[in-house]
Amino acid sequence: MEEHGQWKRAFIDATAGAFSGAISRTVTSPLDVIKIRFQVQLEPTTSWALLRRDLYGTSKYTGILQATRNIYREEGLAGFWRGNVPALLMVMPYTAIQFTVLHKLKTLAAGSSKTEDHIRLSPYLSYISGALAGCAATVGSYPFDLLRTILASQGEPKVYSSMRSAFIDIVKARGFQGLYAGLSPTLVEIIPYAGLQFGTYDTFKRWTMKLNQIWSEDERLSSFQLFLCGLAAGTCAKAVCHPLDVVKKRFQIEGLQRHPKYGARVENHAYRNMYDALRRILMKEGWAGLYKGIVPSIIKAAPAGAVTFVVYEYTSDWLESSLT
Image 1 (cartoon, rainbow, N blue to C red):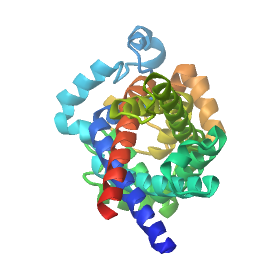
Image 2: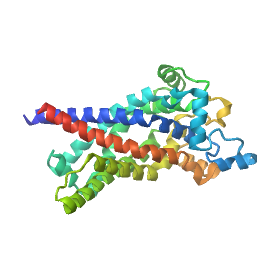
Image 3: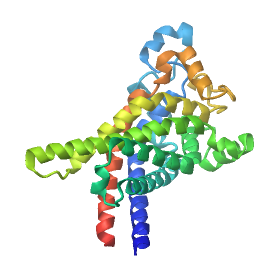
Image 4: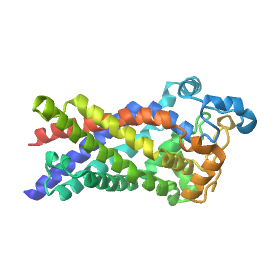
């Protein structure tokens, strides 16, 4: 009976996680495409770069509105969802694994499978559980993340017409290990990112529940309060970990032969390792280089985190009541 309950809980977590991830990713795809274009552009991504053409040459993208107009004019509305299929194939197993592992770890830490007991875990255990769940989910879904980045960053004319052609070319050129290019900085990024996201989400929920108890003697959280907690958690995590995301994207598009209008390319073996990439970006592009795409990233991370948590909570509750 206990084993049946564990399988049921795993099914609920995996299904709710996959569904919430798919909804969140599709809704925020336009911001994700803009963020990736900024991150893989070696030239500056702010409008003041136009005043420094003698140093950098012309920048393709120099702001969110300018990039939005540019992508729409050159690639149409579909350009904002470029790479969304591999993104969904990445995010659905990612969030399914993440929430399943997270619930299992919290159950072990709390000695109980009840969600209300998980909320009362210490912040440290929440951070550790989130970080470990993020690592497991990253390893399980990483090749789709790499394919998503390549398809979203290639622009027009397309280098790859489909996910399949990109997959075959990467395996031919770099072997199967090429599907895991940039995994090291990703894992280094995901440990603090997932830890912060889930740890701060639990912390904000606890604070909000205490405020509710003071104001109305009912600690239950409304959907709007869950949304705000997810919004704050996503923003905090993304702001701290963004430079490592930039490094990851550079490793993922090494050797991608984009049209020259998109600026300088990231050549094969441009960076020896993660530390070398951080150092070279800092030397050539300054601190701003490590934060390229931070504005669309935070604008995207906030609603993405909020939508993910809210959809997960409601889907999980609905499945639990339906299967009882």
